[in-house]
Length: 146
Image 1 (cartoon, helix red, strand yellow):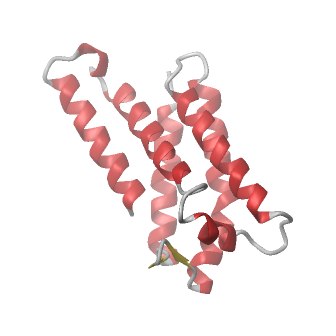
Image 2: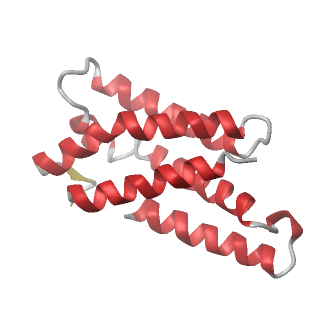
């Protein structure tokens, strides 16, 4: 839920900054792009922090080297978050992040069904997690629009 709060909260803050006069944030596109980038930078921190073992448990057992998968997905999240902020790379970063959300969703399903905790807290139940994933997907796609 924290990534969702960060996404919505930062979007609103940047949008209001633009509304009240800072021309860089004038328009929802830039505000959304930065908010999505912040969200992915935030979620990437879990790939190396105290939540890392929990993320490794989420990886479906049919996949080899779950620790490596968690590391690679964290690197992709960071690279694409930065890529969203660069106009020439924002579209491709958006596509990669959308794809990443799709391929990582089975891990979220596994966490919900197996009752895997993340940072000592229960994972988000499957239905709300699916709704959040759809919201994140839409935000990522719109963030890549020029």
